[in-house]
Amino acid sequence: MNWDAELDATGLLCPLPVLKARKRLMALKSGQILKMQTTDPAAIVDVPHFCAEQGHKLLDQTESDGTQVYFLQKA
Image (cartoon, rainbow, N blue to C red; front, side, top):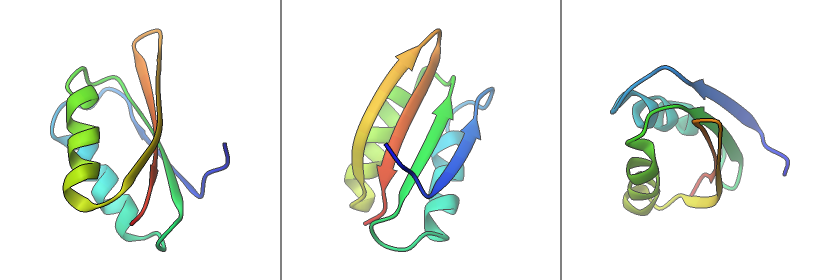
């Protein structure tokens, strides 16, 4: 998958990954995609909730070796 911006939020805990994603998405145009990596265990709940609340699309989420990768499309 192609993306327009990337956010490395590994090592950050709730709520910082979502707050940083919000800030990064603000700089993107509607329809652009943000790839976010995080190790925060709460992100599995926080990121989908954030997308639903803000109207963004959660295109994909995967986990490998404790690192979660999310692809968010700006509303």
